[in-house]
Length: 219
Image 1 (spheres, rainbow, N blue to C red):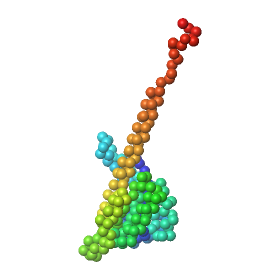
Image 2 (cartoon, helix red, strand yellow):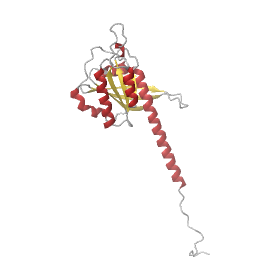
Image 3 (tube, rainbow, N blue to C red):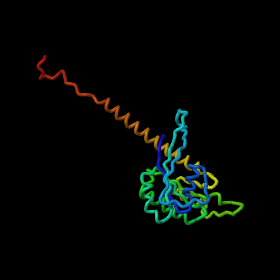
Image 4 (cartoon, helix red, strand yellow):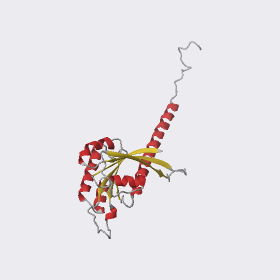
């Protein structure tokens, strides 16, 4: 089993907690209270390595930190995204301003953590409010707008609905597969270095004394 730390960031009321609870508990609460500080949950998924002959799935455990979106808690965020393996930066597709705030989080992560050591996923929530026959289309952030930004910043990108569950599991599955691939490459690279080091040590030959030394006492 591999264990990875994942953090959720984004403005207040974009649905971060609802996304986590949909993934972990497969539940949704219309009247969920705002997170205070941060909340911790965990969940496992299974990864099938198609490049391996093994028929066994690899278990991935996510340690999830769901951070509060209110401005007064923003200073606490570095404590949670430090040493994270992945970050979900969430925005509300019915609120244009939430995308701008999500972009600020992406910039902060890249500056403070670096995207070489961190998988960042831009995640648009509340897809259920788009193209709804009951409420009309409330979309404020076009898919192409967010998708182009994600591609420019080399981010994963998804749109989901925490309320219906649409796309939520796919997000965590995709992140898990990418983290597993990175971990696998690291392990193979380490194994290669160890093999090379062992080979070099075997090839070291001890210098043997010469039997043709003219100063030797034996002729």
